Image (cartoon, rainbow, N blue to C red; front, side, top):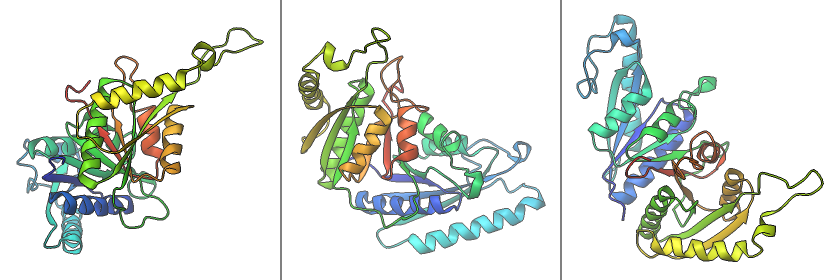
Length: 307
């Protein structure tokens, strides 16, 4: 079972963050973890005093015109704790001023030894403060711990039990780490693992009159890749869990999302960084597309060496 004792949930009090909090509570129950509920009170840089962690509880020296925002935030945090706390769910509220949300989230996660960050992809109104390309992207890209990303949809039912997990593989060391984490989560939840490798179409043509498909170069590519995938999964760390292997051709990001819907998985586990210099699973391409469009939660896994 993954060792998850502290879950960090950054909130901006948006509907998207509320959806993510429900998932954080669901996971906290399963792992018997404590939730650190963090709201970043964004202020001008000149008003933020002192290094972390002393700033976690507020500097106490903000100008008067911030006092109303601070009071409202404290009330909202208190209401959230009251609403979601239970004998089996411990929630610790934290309000901290900062000039920028992402650096504080990352530093808090490091200083408090968070095992998992659970956050939404979009924030309040059109501003979308927890938006890929800003806060969420920076957290996913730079976090030392894994990040569980929840995208709010028009219909947000209660979090589902995790019975089926999809993990895309590109045969990189980073995706081997993702497989290991996916195995642990599958074993912890008694879930089935779906392992997917996507073969991308060749990006070139032989002439203006004809093109070469991947099957022209290797007629047995599906069978060969399937065997390679089995070897890769067997060699990855983690417990033995039931696994189905899938090899498909297409656009990587789109195929991952389509497969997640076709198989009706409960979560996707994906490396936040990919194949060495090519970095196929890198924010701005595959991982970002999956985070933006997948209807199920996405666990982004960072390799141990951060490469």
